Length: 227
Image (cartoon, helix red, strand yellow):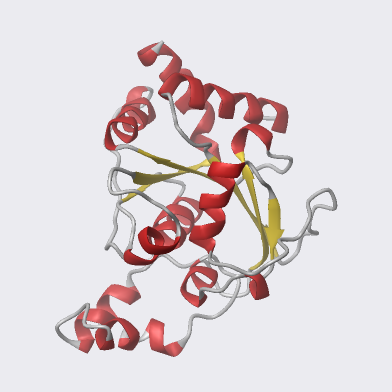
């Protein structure tokens, strides 16, 4: 695929599925690669989930470094840095009262999809229909019926099931980006307390992260089923 074709796919997704906001193209720039010169750096640090929300609603595009990510959990899940011990051990979530025991919190955090620390030096965000850099993952925030349609399109060609895993924790970073990036499989997730608080995700919305390798098949199937 060329980036122009990816842009066309973004426009088609919006039209076919009647999406209210743009699919978001997320590119993880490895430590061995250069940051694209045509993309500007984000001017003010914020959380990854807020970046996704700004891009899907406003159509902006930018790149970020680790210092631009206000949430250590999100930055670490996507390989920009090491996860803090308080998070990795589960201690933070245990102290917040999310788990009955520290062991329960630890087991959960040990299963959070995480890109190897330091392997990524920058992340580029853009609306799919305007992206200038080839994405690794496409994030779509939509209502459950639209996620259902996407799921049906994803399995049309080869069959099977959409297998996913989530915990309601680190949703837009670990489930929506790291999982598809690491495993080449779509990640359906329900959001988390942080993303619903900070990123404007509505009670009526869910999230799916789609590896770029599956985008073309998704579009072809969506055309056949829904148009």
